[in-house]
Length: 422
Image (cartoon, rainbow, N blue to C red; front, side):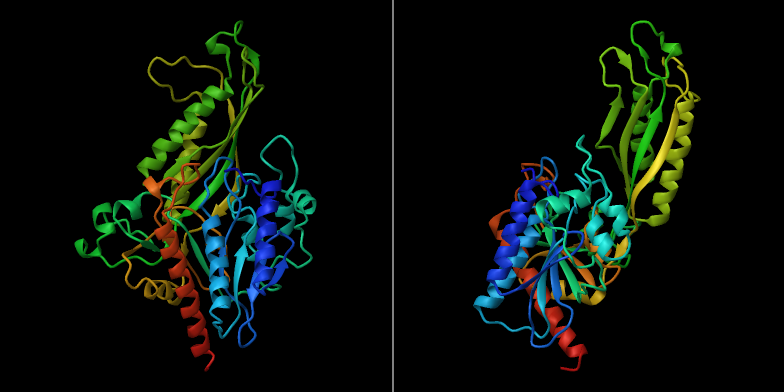
């Protein structure tokens, strides 16, 4: 499936969401980032208790990641209406724009604008990764989802945000768990004790999403003819980039983190020309903010040494130096979720095998947690595969997750009523 953010396919999915929400007697509001809020009224006014996720996918994505959370939220609204269940406060579902960051290269950008962490102008001026060069604002206008409402937690406050989605990894499936409740990983807890706390004397860590930083790396050398330029005379930007990417993986492993490159663009792209300029993406992640910065510092130092030719592998010919430039595109600190919100998820897992865990991927909950109580619910996917057409979640697991989501929303609504003195 390919449903890139603000594409024609995304518009179709958005139109379905809006129409379905209105059929369920929800008020639909769309903000200046295209974030779409479907809200069902409660007995009293107030910010809604929301389920939140996204409808966009990766270029070759699956049918569940993100989408499952929106569909489960809509089903929650449907059950509440059919069973004539009244909630104390409004209840809603949010579709956040461009969560993936696949087309416009800042993930979770629209929830970031809503939370006040990313300027609206920065988001609106983001250009698509492909050669078309369209901006987010242009595409929002084109598909009719540039809303009149300000994209802000002040203009559209929500009371709590529950996110339901696939666990993007094999842990739940391999340990035969139905539900994952997001939680952090202490460095002192080994993988074997991670899913069985009784094997460790250390207290469990708090719910957490690991930190990440997205960069664009530009390597500048010199375009030259492949047949007439000897190896020592080449400033090969692509060869240098390959060394840097390999170094990023080695350094990440040494620091207990992750490093990935998903986009690499050489210029000129010609069979018989040594590339003189290359840009590539660098996604680095770590559960600890300080460790992530140390890892990045180590990469910057080694990248500079490799590009200058100061470090050579055995048998490698020293060429001319290249320049390296870093640009930070999207930083995201580690996040700890709200205790009461997590407890509502935990209590909704009665009768199911659940485990508390850290999220290795960033989600819109990273930004919502800056403004409102937030938690996440995970269900297993086959072989831990996501961001892939083979992505699959069993019907039973989808149903389990949807049931836990509705239970958590209703429990938090009851908690809000209790706190309000009702």
